[in-house]
Image (cartoon, rainbow, N blue to C red; front, top):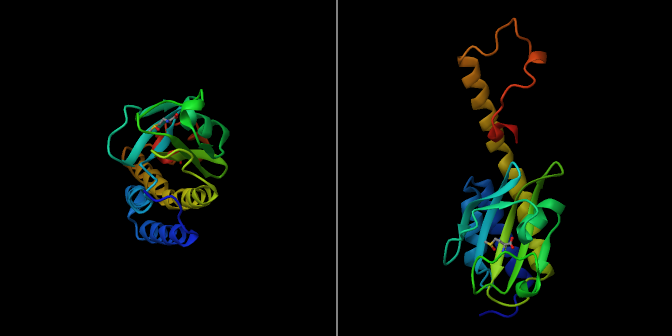
Length: 193
Ligand code: SME
């Protein structure tokens, strides 16, 4: 297992992720790169904010987690989502908030993904190594979070457009019903961004 990693390693990983996201490879590729390129990243997952919960999206690691839905405010994941700030826990056994996913986990970092000041998801990385995460990990993951926030925007636009087209097809927007009266329509979460 690697014990020290040069900054250049992190820079290369960031460059790879930037290329993957701008090439449209999306979140799953990003999660895979983080896991595969950084040996102390034992398990990597992305949780999306859905209502009052965090819902697991793409993940990479040796085993699935049972915690596919975590209420905001619970666990280290829920704490990071509630505060909107990065959580680094060097010894998970010593943190009362910790919700165990894998018996091998010793430390964890959770980095919120924010868009326009709102938490829309988070990156969760577990390590089998104690105190595995430091300033380079925080810097890398916070930059990746910013890239994800920017890359996810077009997906929201597409969802909003397809909702509008569907509604238009159903005749939901007659000329007699101006936009000022659309407020309160049941816009699906995916289209709200
Ligand atoms: N340990 C997290 C739960 C998620 S698993 O690590 C995948 C927590 O305390 O919130």
